[in-house]
Image 1 (cartoon, rainbow, N blue to C red):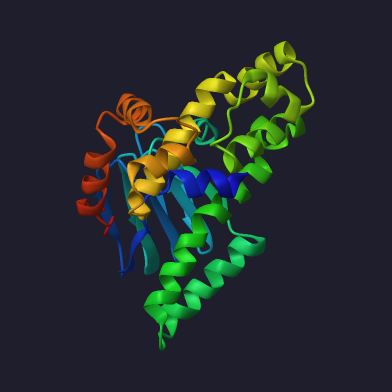
Image 2: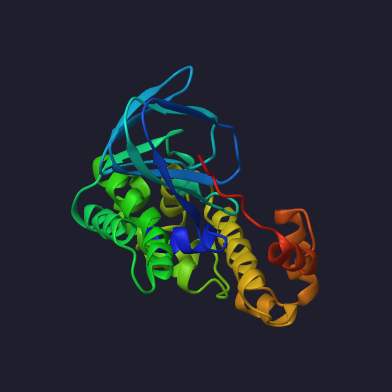
Length: 270
């Protein structure tokens, strides 16, 4: 479920850079639209806003899922990996995340950070590719660790998860509230209320959201014609698909495809 969400909303690969600090230092990170992150490889530092103060030690990760403006500072040497993920239309599951997701690495997240540290300490053949792959995995591990400590009803309601799985893996199906309720093992009325309570929007509204997120991903990553994308996302005509896409994204599918391939993501360099 979490993998589905991240795969649908991420746009391209993360941009990141290695940052070395020595002695007392401070920097301001302006607000940005991407999901920025900092991994403390060595040393420690402090993240500050007018409302929050977060101390970060080696092995800690902090992510700003909706972008934010903040200050980072330290009193001694530090090695950080800083960067950002560009997210397209945040998923309802991610809407409830705090301004800053701060986790102390453990389990697989700790293993990924150890590998990052090793690659940065002793670069070898293919280090650039290895770091990019590890950073790609990082968002999933950070969110998994966060939700282990802060359970989300979306991830723990078995009935609703079954319906979400059906939508995610068969967006082209002619779903109705009743048929989705059948996937969840609930009556139409019970399912509609429970889904809305847990997910935060009605079943068919979420279905449309997911279809449009899927369409956007396919437009970014494939050259499939619009008619094929319409069929893969549950629309009976290219016209109906294009109309729904423009309503959701504000631009026609063809224009979205052109822009998505020309846009670049600015790294968050300190």
